[in-house]
Every structure is written in C-alpha cells, then in structure tokens.
Image (cartoon, rainbow, N blue to C red; front, side, top):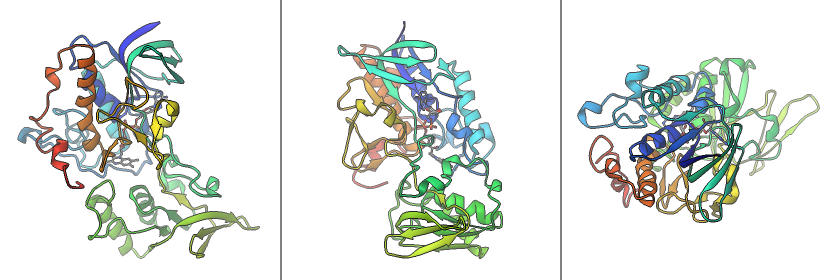
Length: 373
Ligand SMILES: Cc1cc2nc3c(=O)[nH]c(=O)nc-3n(C[C@H](O)[C@H](O)[C@H](O)COP(=O)(O)OP(=O)(O)OC[C@H]3O[C@@H](n4cnc5c(N)ncnc54)[C@H](O)[C@@H]3O)c2cc1C
C-alpha cells in the first residue's frame, strides 16, 4: 500500500493551492487525488459563465491577482481575461500543476475514507488503497448542488447542471434564487432574448445591505443585472420564498410561494438556489461534526473537531463571522494548514511564514477583525 504524509482530495482551486503550500514543507511526501481532470468543476461551468472577481496583474506592485492560487501567478496573465471563463481558469490550474510538478493523480476518485484509530487514514481509490497521515478534503461545492430545496424541484434544471444557456429555447423562463447563480442565469437568458422572471427572497444588491461579497452581489453581476433590466425582458419579484412546484394536466408548472402567491410557467423553472451545505464534505460526513445549520464545525486551524488530522480547504470554510467562500478568501488558509502539518511532523515551515509579500497585508485575515469584510 502506498503511504503519504499528506493526501489532498480534489484538484480545484483549493486542492492545487493547498498542494503548492505543502510543497514548501521540505521532504513532505504528499499527493493530490482528483476524480476527474485538474479544475474539473470549472470545466463544467455553463459556457457563458465568467469569474465575477476581476483578475489583474497587480503582482509587480505587491498585490496578488485576486483569483490566483499562489502569490507569483496571475490568471489575468495566463488567460488574458479580466473575468476568465471556467475552462480558461481550469487551464490556468493545469498550467500551475504542471509548472510546479505537483503530484496529481487524475481520474482517481476517492470512494471511501477510513480513519485509522491510532491516527492517519486509509483511502479507497481506483488505483488501490492508500495510506495518508494527514488528509485535506478539498472537494468543493459545485459538483454537489442541492437538487431538492422544495417539493417538486426534481423537475427543475439546477444552475450547476447547465452546460450552455443557448440550449434553453423556450420564449420565457422563471429563475429561482437572487444571489450570484440565479442572477447569472437570469442575465444570460435575458441576453439571449428570453423573457425572464427572477424570484428572490430579498435583494442582495441593496446599497444599505451587507458589503461582504459572500452575502452581497458582486459589482460585476450588478452591472450585468442593470443592463438586463434595461432590456425590459427581466422582471424581478422580491420577498418570494418558494415552497413547492406542482404540474398541471397540460404539462405546465405552478410555482408556489410561502405567502400564497403562485406563478404558472410552461417551462420548468431554473434553480439558482445553491449547493448542499458542506458540499463535497458530505462524502465523508461521519468524519466531521455538523452544526445546527448543517455546516462543518472546524477548529481554528480548519481541522475536524472529531477526526484529528483531517482538514477542510475551500469555500465551505467558516470561522465565526468569516465566510471564506471565494478563492481570494480561502487561499489565506492554505499556509495555516500546511504549517500545522509540517509542525506535527517536525519539519521546517519557514517557507510558509506569511505577513509579507503579495498575500499581505491586504490579503491577511487580520484585516477582517471586528468587521464583516
Ligand atoms: C459561475 C461561477 C463563478 C464563480 N466566480 C468566482 C469568482 O469570481 N471568484 C471566486 O473566488 N470564486 C468564484 N466562484 C466560486 C469558486 O469557483 C469556488 O469557490 C471554487 O471553485 C472552489 O474551489 P474548490 O477547489 O474548493 O472546489 P472545486 O473547484 O469544485 O474542486 C473540487 C474538486 O474535487 C474533485 N472531487 C470531488 N469529490 C472527489 C472525490 N471523492 N475524490 C477525488 N476528487 C473529488 C472534483 O472533481 C473537483 O475537481 C464561482 C463559481 C461559479 C459556479
């Protein structure tokens, strides 16, 4: 059986970024196991989807590109785009993995994980069993959509299942969900000439609302939303809590709101309602403690509170009020985890010391103390 000091599961932004941090620990034997290709989730984005966070090569001035997974690289330079597409970003991640000779095994889905009582993990993979002293779970959210947010949702396409909006050929659609994916769906459909109704619980672009990008619509999406409203093809209905979907004898759909309102549509509504809480961490649900909101409970070093040696990397990470759901947020945690593992193994972690360079002071988490940014 192959033995590693540390295994990373998932080769998305979190897994590749984590691997780069682990590579800074001298002599650490680690590997990345990926079910598909490097950047698999990004390769599955709808064709029209773009990064909402702008990429910019500010590196020479001491500021990392907001979408980079390490300090020196820049998706803006690699892709030539301010708002890269999913495939462009996947190519950037592949380029980084190749350039740094990261040990990534693709087409290698981890089917099961067993925690060894004395410490460490046994992983079941298509290439046999693997033993790892530490495990970093970086399986993201995108491939784990919540397909049942209300009864009847099984008839609805979910944003994460859409390959290309041009395949939506009906003249009108209803989109459910008023945050990034719902707005992106609505904007793209309106741009293709469809009449669109967007049902939202509340406005995520209210200037009086939160300024945390994890709770508030990005400027990029706001601009596109206002342009879509200007076409006259987008209607937005606020205060809607969809509680169910029923079908009529003619094959149409009735969307029911909690306050008794309803809307009839010929085409199935589109879900922009989010992902399973915990996302891919649900695959090893028994190895985490879960809070009453269905989120993974983590130590202050992003380690499972019930399975020592198991860490979570990626958008599901939360620490008190801080929501690390974007790359420029969760990348701040790579060095923390790698340092913890290095110190446990009595390795030199000097190369992981932060507080200077392009990640900081602008990129460190201390700037968020006491505020919600
Ligand atoms: C349209 C869209 C636009 C976005 N725009 C931005 C943006 O502008 N800025 C930003 O910061 N974020 C953005 N995000 C969010 C960002 O994409 C995610 O936060 C990011 O992809 C999370 O990275 P990850 O590595 O955790 O997950 P993923 O990229 O989903 O990677 C997880 C990987 O794990 C693999 N995997 C899963 N289970 C297993 C298993 N059992 N064994 C082996 N491998 C497994 C998957 O195949 C996948 O490759 C956007 C998301 C979408 C959908």
